[in-house]
Amino acid sequence: MPLQVTPPVDATGGLARPSSTWTGWGQWLALVTMTVDHLSRYVVPDSWGLGWADSSIGRIAFPLFAAMVAWHGLFNTRNPLRYARRILVIGLVAQLPYMLMPRAADGLILNICFTLSLGLTGGAWLQALSERLERGALGVPRLVAEVGLAIAVWATAGLWVEYSHLGLLMIPLYMVALQALHGAGEGLGERLAATAMALPVLIVAGLMNSSDMAKSFTVATCLSILLLAAGAHRLMPSVPLGMPRRLWLGWYPGHFAAIALWLWLAGGLA
Image 1: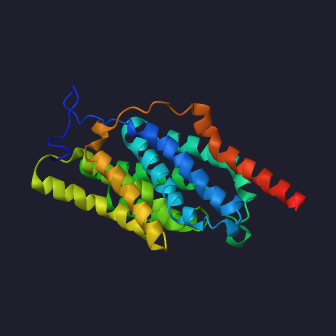
Image 2: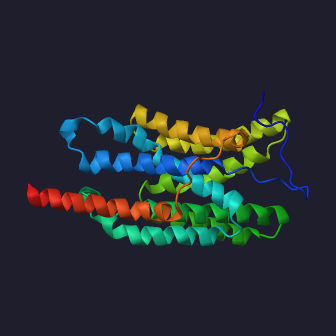
Image 3: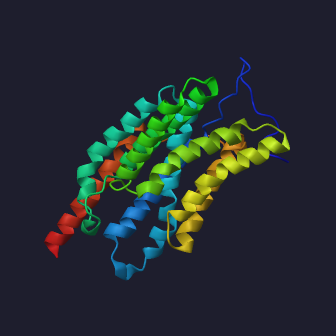
């Protein structure tokens, strides 16, 4: 049985928003996998042999965070740029403890919130660009100027943010794929077109990692999100325990601060 027979419509005849119930589960999974990744990378001694966790469980976190940001930016907020600013504020708070992690060889890198915020900004611009093109409200000179500026920002920002240039592409490509899959009708042509629109985000997810294990976990995470957009979102039950808002907002900077404190104490006791 196909996941979606006809695109759902709301009372006004427009395309209905998909259920976001799955994001309640996604929040818990994202925090757990991110924490496992950072603990195995920064805290657990190499002698414990837990490096596999970074290349497996740890590779779920970023595509899941990016998917939730893209989903909410596309379906659940009227102002994606304001949403992007809120993410940026968390990134600013987290940057100092993030810089205390033992990553000196990487130089100055901005944390994942900057990647997510810039990615959502790019996705919102791409959606608005598409709408203006459909209305014929964008001339060729303006189009060339905007696209050129977007490429320049992407090329520059990718040098400074976590997950680099490919990471910045995840949310815009997610938004394109999610919109296409959710809006696809029952016709074979529409389904094939929606599937084609979903391929770029899967390709980028595969290119983000070097090992086969890491690629598998990242691509599998992305594929799961795409299936949710195609209709599986209706099958997700509510999470028994919702994520407290303060925990959700504070865990990213807080867990880096806790790791930095632990490393400082461990170094002082060594």
